[in-house]
Length: 500
Image (cartoon, helix red, strand yellow):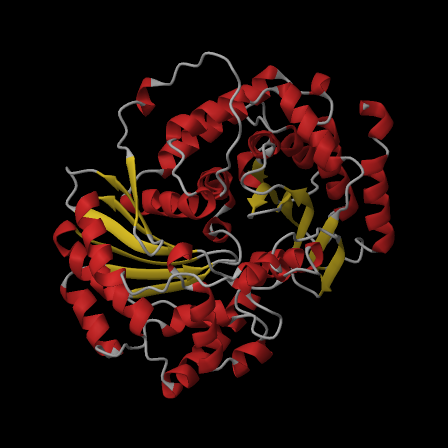
């Protein structure tokens, strides 16, 4: 949903997928680095941090008696701030029958509370010059406000009112149902969204991680007030919520506001059994083809990746950067570092491609998304991608130069992506929900610096060789039949003897 006051967006895949591929190449690293931070044990060796990372503001964290956490990064020089509530709740915590409830709830939260009508909320936000936003992902739901420092208290009170006192009137539910159904239709026009939703479905068919965020149309048509209230009581508990502030915000003042407006957020009951059933998603793989006469083909190849806290995360992230991203406008001269880009360009195998490394709590997806003409050699493009994966399995095939370049790109993108209070708040919010701490840019710089070509080869062998493969095709994709999938899977197996 979009209007001048509210941006309510479901995030099936990262926002940057809707940008041009030139921007995608850098944003892929930015958003994945920030949204998929993991903890890795450090090695015993001396390391000097870059001066550019020294002196950054600290992140302060406070926990209230009900389990609610407050985390801030303060910059007193700023007169603006981003404040919000990050919740450990998304479509992954739904059943097949109520899939779509988390996203529906996000929409309904702006439709009026016990003390304010929808119009009252809109006028108040407009009058203080703030911007209220929300989005839902597979594992998180976020409500936040960008505001002047002097209006932080008002913004926190509004967020508290929305999250704790929304009325969920039947008439509003009926109206919003139509809005979400139209949103569903718009999402189906976004080929990248469709392809990545289908990828999750075939990768994790036995897990709620395979569900879409909006849910199927049948569910959207039948979600009730009781479904919404039940989801809130189960998931919107103090231990699963973090209040975040970044910019011109005082930590102690935000803690007092949290005590004042969020003291009644319920403490958790014994929900361990409920949440355990959503864990341990099993990667299955397979092929899913959506055949039509669309003028371009959209293809994804993926193996299982890793969760945020997996010690292999950083090495895979550097491997993803080595594989890179490319489109035709970049050409394929010596200035293009990606070997896969040169191969794709030389043989006209695709119009563009992008490597991705998507992580969740306990698993992930690692692969390449590419776009071709209908007449292109789809199997040839898939083979080139797998050959690149296999190349990385042998340390002797990896140059020091490409490792250094990939690491520098990650470090640079990290710092560039922290330009503004909202991306900083998003980084803190995600990390607090994942690790119950904020990993500083110093730590991230250190962890990236530890990766070398030996580690890249080790994790590549671990996650590429003889592993299940997921293939999704949209368009004129008859080339990618079951026989093609078998040949590609065999190609991954055939490298075993060569690298072991």
